[in-house]
Image 1 (cartoon, rainbow, N blue to C red):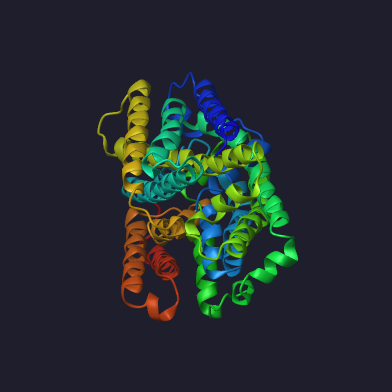
Image 2 (cartoon, rainbow, N blue to C red):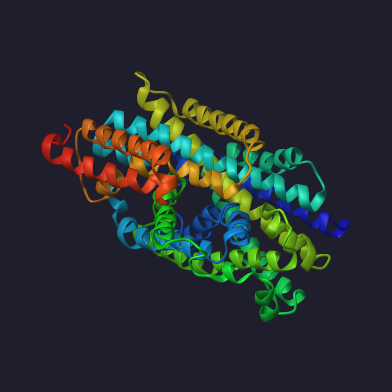
Length: 459
């Protein structure tokens, strides 16, 4: 990469670090670390939520999968987009039921008791740590391709910055850096596609060079397999800790709902753009490592100067998601596991220091884990199994005012995780249906049966 582009990247990383440290100063409590004052407007919710979910999996991972299996992956990702719209219209207006909650576990705890809160904290941490690992791995790919740097050093530099400002500044630092990162990625990623298509000779030339089966809406999948993938994206990240935290930072529930809706609508064209970059990479280089589809297009299609800007956009994509899930993991562990299990309460200062320490250790652990990652989107699919089959149906019910004994929640959680494991072990490969869907259904059935038979509200 030319030194001009390297300079742009260096200045961008320094700016992100400065903004994160500056905006996050003055933290005093765990609530500051978790929800940053609950005073943000719709456009801030829109920017930070979009920056959070548009991570390595939905950009580099989407380009990788479209390169490999075709256009069908874009359509499957629209399950996620539909999920955001449903959350905006159904869940976000009901956040007023939990005005003091700082996490998913806080909502679960109010509705089903301490044991349910601790369980949600465990699985929330596992989910966030897994998704964080995917973002960390993506960071290594970016630095490796553009700077010729070993992946481990790219991971240490890029994620070290995110770990530093998210540890020091908590959610406020995450939100303010997300705003800057969203602006860069919203410009840089579309720019890469349109300039790349121009270099390839236009849309017609690009599509002519792509194998016909990659343009098939079902991509060779059966309708059931496609439906399974669509539902996996719809359910897999629904109401995960970082996204629920975004529902808690708005000035009002109306502001939060509006920002969430905008984010869902924005995801439709954005997923199409990152997927088309995968098709463009296939047209330009059929023998490419699929994981490098998006970085390859940037490397080949953009001139000096613009290349540095767009690479900054790719770094923004990964870093903005990594910092959100890192914060979500720390909050899940501290707010929903450590504090509920303590017999004596801690002061605000000690609680904040514990949260910052957990944030730091989680980030370091994710860096170590990410070295083993092979497929960015694949690790996301695995991490999803730690959330929706265990938490989702009772959590949605809580937003509608359902309260029950902890045994109701635990019975449903056990049914969900056991069904997911059993299905994925013995049935999924032959059926084409992911165990996550079966697990969510099992959880919901057991939850409502138990609710009717033994689920009087907790005292």
